[in-house]
Image (cartoon, rainbow, N blue to C red; front, side):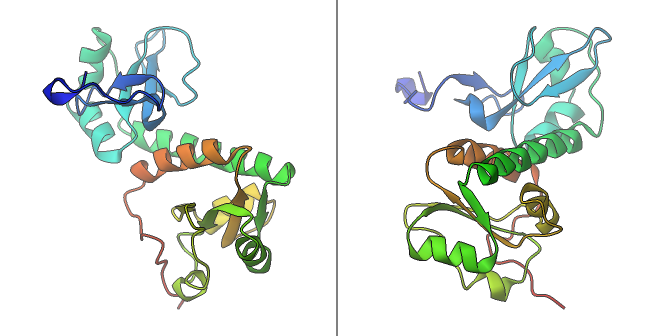
Length: 207
């Protein structure tokens, strides 16, 4: 039941309540946290660890609020400790998940990197997701357009994309529909909320 007594659409899967915002939303947009025997709070980004868990929206401001106002103690109903760099650790782990998923997509033939290969996939309408490095040249990135009805991911760094494709750096990449595309998009959206700056795909000019 949503606000105003209106039933919410649950087609996006199970929902959980964020301890920082109080909002209920699909689990894939939240980060699950658990505690260890010593009462230390740590992220369970895959949401697979046993025990009681609490959820926080995958958003830097929400996490900072949960840490600063000691909302984890209220959520767990126990004395717990949350590290000040918890949000940074979550961002690091989510970024690693995105890179690993992209690497799997590359190995299965569902992802390509490099301007020419990406352009070919876009021209042939084989690409569902366009990925471009946040720190790439704005002029270079503007030459490629997001697929019609597709998705755009522009908040990974050239180094992170490079790790996914076994290269030093990658500026342009594309992902085919099906396969791991949905999971990559979901994890990338979680990462976006944790990154304080998003250039909206404009990039920054190279000096």
